[in-house]
Image 1 (tube, rainbow, N blue to C red):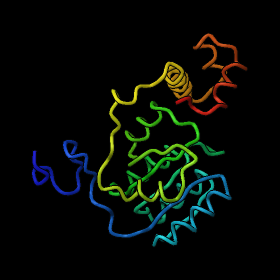
Image 2 (image 1 turned 120 degrees about the vertical axis):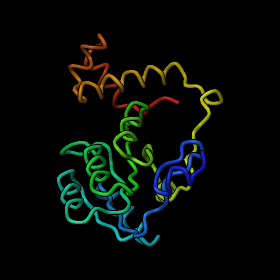
Image 3 (image 1 turned 90 degrees about the vertical axis):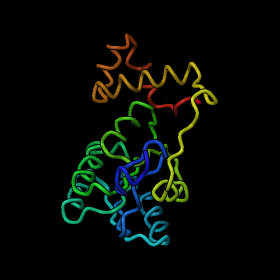
Length: 196
């Protein structure tokens, strides 16, 4: 299949080539870590973006309502909700937008959900401004070879726990019940970084 056959604005799965970059450089950054939010905003303004900063899902949704940005950097977990809700609304309001989800709770299930809802990429925290910028502006999508980089048994267990946790709407008690695990044990596992 040639790129011409599917049109310029659609994703070409064979070439791993995303849609063209949006024309304008409007950028929404949504994160409840104020220090990180301000540092990242300054770094992105230095790279030519017109930045709107938001700290809550409500602020993010309001910003989308007034002027949907071309780019977005959205934290996954916020005090008043989930960044995936903002990604979904962004793609509805502006289909050509490129949204990156950031999270300290990286897992495959959530990454798949984020991409299905319209995220362009998914980065685990801590991610620096250069990584985020390159992800936003990527012209190809790199897919790691699963055979070259197999997951450890600890990582597989972590992914399973995270998948169940997400399916329980991040309810610790219900997740612990489904996994037949003590609630405190589950809380300790969820508080740790993902194993390699």
